[in-house]
Image (tube, rainbow, N blue to C red; front, side, top):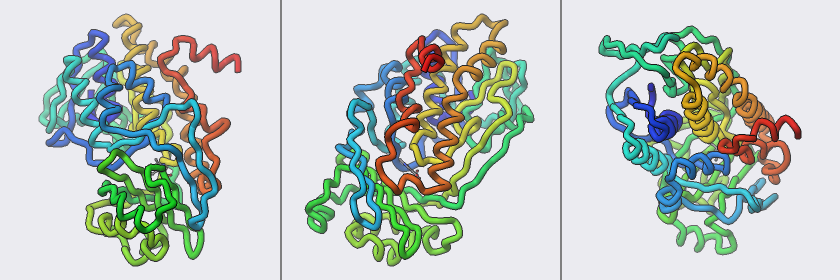
Length: 372
Ligand code: 5PR
C-alpha cells in the first residue's frame, strides 16, 4: 500500500482486521498529519465505529451544537443536524487514532519509504529500486499519486476561483466571549462576506483546547490569499475574531486553490486507488477525507470477499457500485465552490445529504439506492 494518510490507514485497519497481511509505505520521514482540522459526517463515523475506534475518537473530538452560517456577520441559519452524527476534531488527532488502530490490527506502517510506481499485476516499485509483489495494491498516495500516474490512468482537473488557508490555533474562548457575549462559541460558524470583497472565515472548534480556522479568498485577491495572513485586512472584516486571527498570523500555513480531480477509472488489474489520488474534491461539503475513508472501507470488504484470481474483477465491480456516490459528492462540492452557495445557509438538507446518509456498512445499501 502507498500512503499513510486517512485513506491508506483506514484501508490498512480494515484489511488487517479481515486477515490480510498489510504493509503501508509512507514517503514522509515521520508518520504524522500536517493538516489543521476536519469535520466528519455520519457516513465516515459509521466506518470508524466499525473499525472499533469510536471511544478513542470521541475522547478527543466534539459535536458542536450548531453549524451557524452568517452573511456580513448576520446569522442566516443555525443547523442542528437532528438525527445525524457529525463531529469535529484536529487532523493530527484523527491520524493518531487511525495509526494506533492500524498497528493494533497488525498492519506494518513504514515511514521514509516512497512508492514510485506499480503495475497492474501487483508489483510495487520503491524509490530505493526494490520491487515487491502483492495480491492487492492500494494507491492512497494523494492528489499527485505516483501509483496512478505510473499506470497511465488519465484524469482531468477542474479548478475553482477560490481557495483557503487553514490553521490550528487555541480556542481563546474567554477572550471571544468577552468581545461577543451572545455568540455560542462552540458552534461551527461560517462567516461569509461578499462586501467589501469576498472573504470568508470558517470557525470550527475541534476540542476544548484547539480551534480550526480556515480563511477563504479568491486566488486573484493577492492580499486575501497571502500567507502569512494580512492581519489588518482580516481583522477589519471580523474585529471580534482578533484574538484568533492574531495567532493565525504567526502560524505557518499555505493557501490551497480548490479543485476536483476525475479519473478515467479508479482500478486497474490488482491496483485500486482511493482518496485524493482517485477523487480529490472541493471541501465545501467537508467530504474529501470522509469519502476517502468510506471508499477505503468498502474496498477492504470487496477485496476480502473475492478470491485471489477474481480480485481484478472484484475491484472493477467495487468501483461500479461505490463510485457514483463519490462522483455526485464531487459535483455538489464543486458546484457549491463555484457558486459560493454555502453562503445562503440552510445547506445541509435534501440531496446534498446523500453522502452523509450513505451507510457503507449496510449490505443492502445499493438495493436501497436503486429503489428510491
Ligand atoms: N467546510 C469545511 C472546510 O474545512 C472547508 C470548507 C467547508 C469543514 C475548507 O477546508 O468550503 O472551504 C470550504
